[in-house]
Image (cartoon, rainbow, N blue to C red):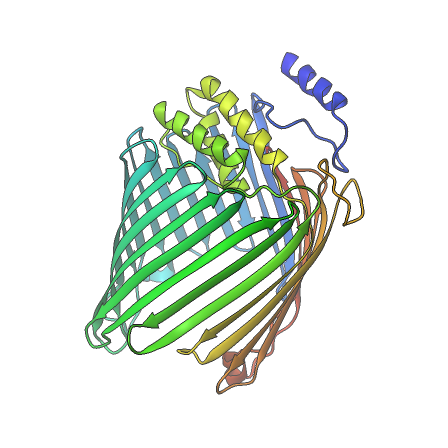
Length: 450
């Protein structure tokens, strides 16, 4: 009762910053049974499809969830050590189970299709080598129906390291055995590295990899990419990215370039450069010292999942202050975009396709204000975005896709989303003489502690 009164008092003292008021960030999770998530969506694709899901918090012991989408039924369960989920759709069953100890974790996923079809199986095991370093081994087997001679198999080993300034480093080696309808299989070996870091007020991401295929379809491929985000004059964000895949000494298979610029209502703090990045890695390290075995995250959903995980820990009282500080930093540094555009182009010489994509959005903050005025107390409210995508084929007519989205944030926890899309006719649609139709989707989402 005292916690409830304290929450109501804090709510009454806080100046409304959204159309709907809410408790300040950093408040401890409620005791007893409480609602953590609610989502409902209805779409026309072209027939009406409904989706509903919820997640319930049972004190400090676990989260339990359920979801329904058309013919799909699913259940989830999360405790400090255990994650489990189960779903069924038209007699196709899928189940996942994972367990994490202070120094290692194991997990598996199994998919059983109807009528005795080939199954899918995934296994994963991770060993924590330090507070910021983890080694993960994984095995994947995907069933293939006739005329494929054998299933697709993949074995991988991944080493990940996290550090200050949003640093993330990963190296992954993979061996794949892929069947072909011609009756033979070929082996593919892949080595890739990923890196991301905040540098002053900017963010940099890069990837580089090599892939070698043996057998009748022998080939060598190199792929790589980079992305940078740079704030200018505190409120203007400039982004640029590039990615390519080629065979050394022969030709470039595909390449993609993109650029974007956006104006924000308040000073820009990127996820890997601000206080939230430091708080995220600090919480993960402290939780791992106390046996939780978690990773830091640098996005809102990942940080919320991290806070949910440590709130179930037996050491939650000692970690509560660290989690509250992370949440407060997230809210203080959340971006408030007002207007922006993005242009990207990609060429795929294997498919004979060239894609051009144009994105634009306009937003309104709360309290409402003119876009050229800076307001450090503003929060996201309305955002209308539009996407135009054109794909040109060497031997087929062009395809044009359009999409428009309206998002309304009543506060950090309550959101309304409306989406309209109109896909273009692809070469496969033309071959099958099938038509495409526009569709719409509306959704309500409640996320406690977002």
